Length: 333
Image (cartoon, rainbow, N blue to C red):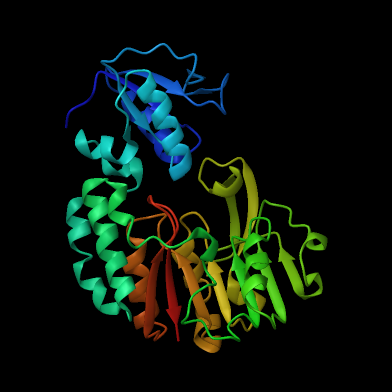
């Protein structure tokens, strides 16, 4: 493991960047933080300055912790004009043999253990996607994902294996502001019921189409019923032992719904939601769109749970970003 001596980190509005800062603070590394959108703020006591005003030297390693391709390119150009040779945060962590947990990558032995899960998948694109993700986890090179990346605008709904009546009773766990429901309406007619679960974000039903069919629940879903602590971070709000907000957690089973489609994206608690939906899944056998990128082990866990316990037979894997985000596993009964 080789700890660098001087590092510039550009882009701080994400967990991997803050993980990297936290790690490097425990070494003798000098750290500078750049983010044009967060100027005047600080991370762990280190002030954030703009790229334009930053004073840099060419012996500093520039790391870009930005996951939008367009924003990454723009920041890279600005840093190169200052004489720096920036790399992505994934490449930086792997090059210096830093702990892979910083960027939410699995250890090498865990990547190897995913070789056999390709047999779960029903189409060539899913198997290619799995191989591309494994290559990306090995190298940190986002180019590994180029050929299999799907448009983010098609996430959850624009898939040929979804039947025309798949959204008849739509359940969204991690609904944020109702954006996924709005997208579902663009692709499917005949949504008779929509059940949106979001513990912190206030969803304005009046701003949603077909609002009469919408039911909103200000609770989080999990394995059991309890009070849990939440940390509010917009789209990345999540349950946390150190969270300052108390939220009621319930199970999906407790609502006695009969869904035809369930989308789950809950910042790392996705598998827990499935455990709390045992009766619902066994009785209704809905199509499931499950986010499996929050924790590296979730892909295997979800495949084994859904196939062995709930007897799902058809699985599809899709990647909707050029980084570690937006990987979705579809389970079709």
